[in-house]
Image 1 (cartoon, rainbow, N blue to C red):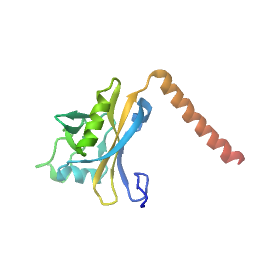
Image 2: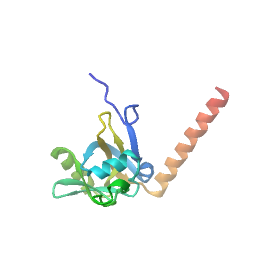
Image 3: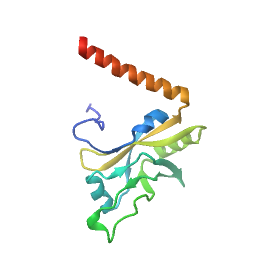
Image 4: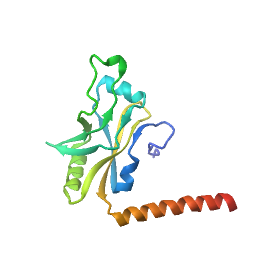
Length: 160
């Protein structure tokens, strides 16, 4: 069986990453979805001009939407360009959308975009996660764990 490729592989080019999502939310499950884009948006993404830090996903009328994601305008296509923060439809199977909708319907859960990237075929993909908001104590614990891992790596590098 072929090895499943992840965004960390060499064949993937990360466009935008929501690093804050893993700090703000406890991500329980993730899913790779496609995005419906205009031509000028794809050109802008090839230049790496996108931001998904303040965006979120919602299920509306049985469809999955990316809300508040910023894709900068592409200068040569100003005449027939696109809106920078328009709602973009996400492409997923009906069963996957239903699973996300049920998860987001529970108290405290939300659908968060994690990373936007080009896959090995050059198609824009978005990895979304189902996350439950962390409280202050959980955030402190995450921060302390990250600091300890960093310190441990430094010690091993110096003495190991």
